[in-house]
Image (cartoon, rainbow over all chains, first blue to last red; front, side):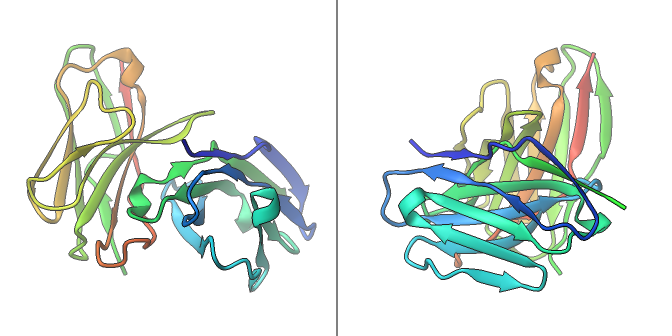
Length: 115
Length: 114
């Protein structure tokens, strides 16, 4: 069975602080995919990144970066110099790869960035 | 841009009523999904469809059914709504060709069953 754990239920930071959202996963599959989604107050989840199990290279996109470590089964997400617009619920998800829609989602981390 | 549109943002229904939640996508995606989102439980898959008239149960199908008569439209049906079905319902779609493709979500339908 697959499992995704986002241990941080809520995080609150002040604007310009760096913040890391943790994601730990469990799977017996050797091929799998990891995702991060952002759900702003408007409600619509937005895809941020996809990573496959064979690519442990970290990725940076602007103020966002992701650290994938198979050794610790973690796929953490860091926002550098956070902004108020980063306030949202962030979900980590794990897919076997045959159908991304059958992903197992974590419970989400609510990030609040205060001005 | 892909657009996934859910017909109602907010609904209030009474116990025992039949409820229809409609979802339409405009990018010719083969896959469509219905999830419910509850605090502390993340997103849970109710049903999905990979083609017209095709459907498969997700993790929590009990109390729900679905209909996909046209490729762009995927409906979630609560035959007899109950208070424990009060939730946020999210529709999503994806391309089947890109089997690991990301999901595109609608804005959600918040259902309250009294």
